[in-house]
Structures are given as structure tokens and as C-alpha cells.
Image: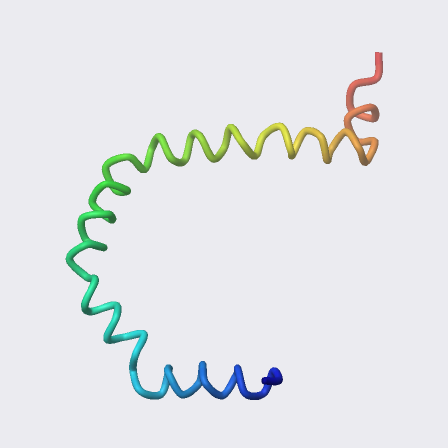
Length: 72
């Protein structure tokens, strides 16, 4: 099976509406999950920011900007 066959089968599933049928079938479960996400959004954002902050500081330091702004 080459890449063209796999792409065609994915397109065929999309044309039949399969993704939309599955979304409708699992909608009640998704609404419960989205309610939980909505209630905890502040914590999710804070933890995501905490994960991104060290990476940002590392990238800024790696480019030499940190040394430029913190001359002693």
C-alpha cells in the first residue's frame, strides 16, 4: 500500500461523514469533559505558563540577550 492509497481511504471516510457521525455519537461525553476543562481553566493556564517560562528563559539566554540586558 503506497501513500496514495492511504490518502484515498482517509478522504473516503471524510466524504461519508464518518468524523461528524462519531462526533455526534460522543457529544455527551465531550460536553462533560468540556465542563471540567472550563471549571479548571485557570489552573490549566497557570501550569502551562509555568512549563513555558523556563524554556523561554533558556532560549533568551542562549541567544545572548540575557547577558546584554544584565550587564554588571
